[in-house]
Length: 102
Image (cartoon, rainbow, N blue to C red; front, side):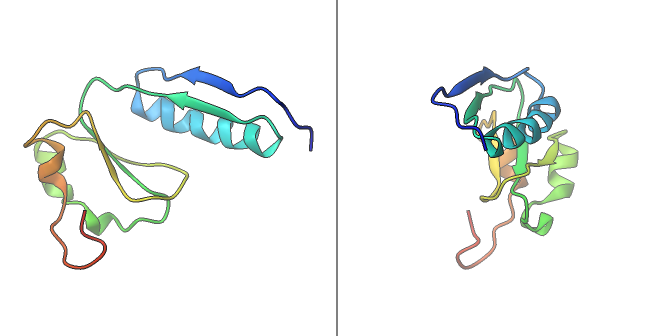
């Protein structure tokens, strides 16, 4: 594996779908020894699930009613609500008891 001393920095496209697809390319680059990061800023609300996260954690009906896309990233971690204003994607989360409640 070739190693790079330079961190490659990219700016997102503005499309959540394209930026999450770009993540696959970045993972391949990192595996080849080229660390990289991408900064994104999306114009509207989006719910992004982690790789193995149960979609039941999100109220898909509420997201559909609010026209909030629900996507999945290739990496772990819990869901993130981006472009959030109180009352939009926050209403998409399920209130579950225990450690999975976020």
